[in-house]
Every structure is written in structure tokens, then in C-alpha cells.
Length: 194
Image 1: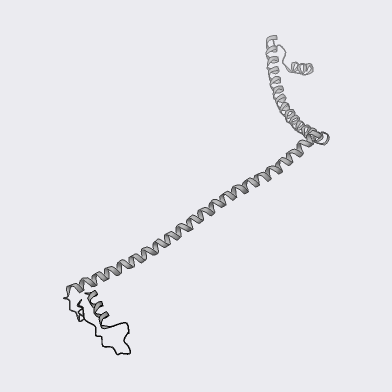
Image 2 (image 1 turned 45 degrees about the vertical axis):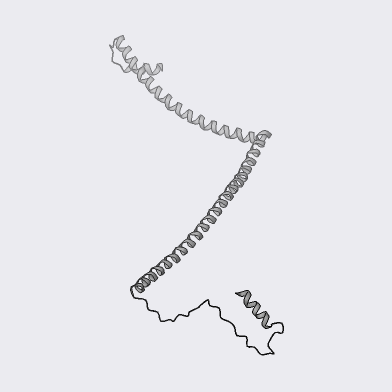
């Protein structure tokens, strides 16, 4: 650095005062410091990225060596593998049980819907039948109202029934007669009836 300062002094004109030299020296020093700071920052960033890369590589190598040499680490890896397999199995069983519950609920709801549809269909059929009956009754009522406007004429003859007691005829042949039935028994029976 002294050589560089001497080269700078040689190029300076003669007759510069000491205070001027100091100012020039201070300016050069500021420029040099500024340039050094820029270079240090650039180099620092490069070194930092290089170290980060190397640290990551070292970590990978150290992890690989740990996996290869340490039994506990291998056991943890095996445990994690088993845990993931078991978790998948448990999760699938849980989801199957949940699906089964939903299937049962859906089946119950479908059964209820079918029952309600059947009741609705039955009710619609009853309503249709009742509407037909009401229409028929209205027609019959209309026919009857038209018939009541006309006077009643009957073409039938009546049969007169009376409650009068008629005496039966007792003219039977001797062969048909009952031997226990005599004239006295017949009179006695007629008297009892009267």
C-alpha cells in the first residue's frame, strides 16, 4: 500500500501543502474504504451462500451416517413406517364404520320415503275415488231433483194384507187323518188360540 501511496505522490504537482496532502490522502482513503466495504459485502454474501450449501451437504452426510450407524435412529425410522401403515389401516376402518353408519341412515330414510310415498299414493287413490263418488252423488241428486218436479204416478197395484183369523178347512180324507186328532182336540186347540 505504501508503494501505491508513493506512486500517487509522484503524480501530484510540486508545491502542494501538507494540508492539501492530508485532504487528498483522506479522499483516497475514503474511496478505498468504500470499495473495500463493497468487496467485503460481496465476498461475505458469497462465503455465506457457500457455507450454507456446505452446511446442508454436511447435514445430509451426517444424517446418512447416523442412519447407517445408529440403531436407535433406524428403530425410529421403522417405528414411523409402522405408524403410518397402522394409521392408514385405522383410518380406513374408521371411515368404513362411518360409511356404514351413513349407509344405514340412508337406508332408513329411503324406507321412510317409500312408506310415505305409499301412503301418499293410497291417499291420492282414496281422494280420486271420493271425487268420483261425489260426482256420482251430485248427478244422482240432480236426477232426483228433476224427478221430484214431476208428479208421482204409480203403475203398480197394491196387495192388501189383513190380520183377520180365517178358519182352516178340516176336510181331509180318512187315510190322511191323524188318529190322535179328534174333533174334541181340535175344538180345545181353537179355544186356546182365542
